[in-house]
Image (cartoon, rainbow, N blue to C red; front, side, top):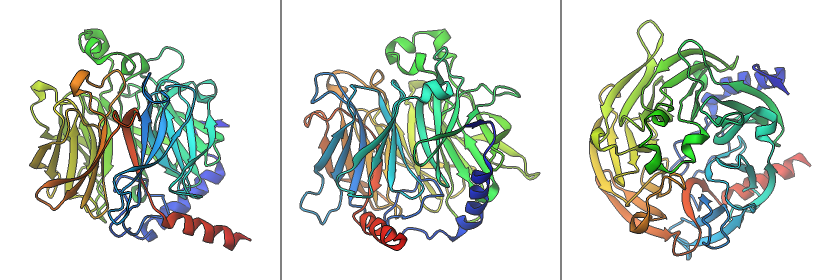
Length: 441
């Protein structure tokens, strides 16, 4: 394992991927808009399954974190129903985010508390994923904890840590693994030239040789009860206020941008020729645009306000549409889903909002923008209590004017825990992998 620079094999793979990125066909109607640009085997029709990474709750079902599979094909007899669930064992590790490998055969999922990474085979039988590997030594081998973003690279998985094993603070880094789960390299987040060392999300623009990273907070904060945390003035100072521009091929930070208020998810515009990305700041409730200026220097600027910042709506997940003209924004505290017109990304305008739950977090939309899925849970110690502690997956249709409910899975009622991250699956994936295996014989 090497630190700070890519191995020669990986560099060659990245260069090849840069050249091939423009040749990857656009999916028609199904795949999510928020995937790595290196992913192959994209879904070309209606998605069949929604994979949900759910946090275990003590005394609820088996109490363990689990991968839940929901049938989301309207033509199916089991539409809107849970058809499979797979617990990873070992109790509760604060299940959080997931990501496909570049061949989409495997789905990686992480725990923010125990730093365990679970790898599921979703290609062999997409309706019934299998746990095939667990990585339990991330902290020991890298010094980083809280695996958050799983970003597919050519033959590799780049994992962003949220914290560190030494003091549980926000200074952290990224770990690069092979698709087989072997550690390849580590990359510390920048701590000089304005860098705070914090990490959260990863987003890559291959044609520009640019990787963007954002920042959040350390384990001492994210595993703390939210009510207590917001009353601690010193702890509230320990949130990220930066984004970093990286040279992708060299895997080295080039510039640190000031983006106050914990910038979370990053979404590049997917329109051909666009070179801008957008993020939302959780604590200040703003949309920020990241793009090169006239001189080619990357800059970040505030471009819109989300709700009423004085009420701390807490924007969490965002989902950009396929041509970069619209953005969904979920705000956890007020349970609202908003849609912003990004026709002019310099001046986003909110054109729609709807209360979609008493608390909402993740949002995923289909490539054609007509299907939207929403999950409820943020963090175990941050979710609301009592009657406000709804735990669900809700499906909607979007006709450009209104979200119309299509189905709901009540995770409390079905004793599944807290619903967090979502990814799409398809029956066609098995045929693709079977054909691939046959061709190799």
